[in-house]
Image (cartoon, rainbow, N blue to C red; front, side, top):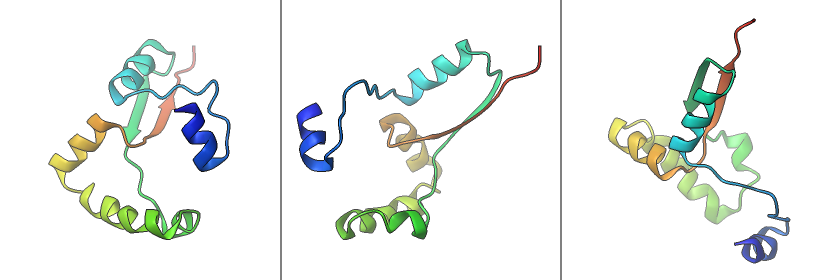
Length: 91
């Protein structure tokens, strides 16, 4: 994977660890963040400008179908990407 990312994106993939939704949720439960949300983000048209034409087409489909509950559940399982909002209570 490291060589592929370096070749395609031109960035170093060392010291990067991708976690699943379940692992992310488990890590948040063990942290000091008692309240947290794990969200499937939408990709805005402004953000989509940074993607190639071939990558932009599926983004529109993603934004539309992630609103369907069963599809949203599948997206959480396959772990496309997430936004995490977490709050720590004062101690």
